[in-house]
Length: 203
Image (tube, rainbow, N blue to C red; front, side, top):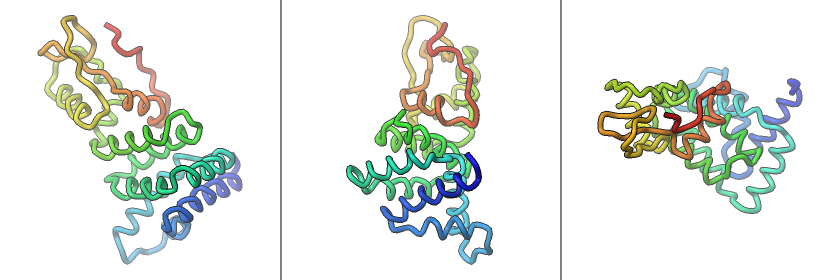
């Protein structure tokens, strides 16, 4: 995508959120580099910019998405705006931007997307990176590994399964961990590059 097309694509994306949520997205994005009197405004603007840059939306898919949400769920943009505002680090905005690209391609549903947003929002960024790294598959018990996996279970990105056999990512109690359905979507579309992880549940 050339620079002009990318600018048009981002403008189209932000226009949708302007129209549906009443938030002056274009104004926020265009003023990211100015001196802010409101620190919170600058933090929010940086998260918005990180989201749109990583989503790199296709104009045709974005136009189709706009029509769909206008007809079926006009509150969607406002919901997403709230999600972005609540993110604690820009890296999460980048992750959700990449997930947004999967949403535009209809590889995940709007419901699944918002559920993943909630999971990412509740998770520490280090725990998400742990999921992306594949270290959760280590069968050897280590307190930090167990803690990270438990936290990802709590936020909905992993699940703990009781087993009578030894599995990768197992704990001393005889249970093992694997990504939840939402966690699998996050692994498929959220990392900055494709994550090569062996099939789930491989002994």
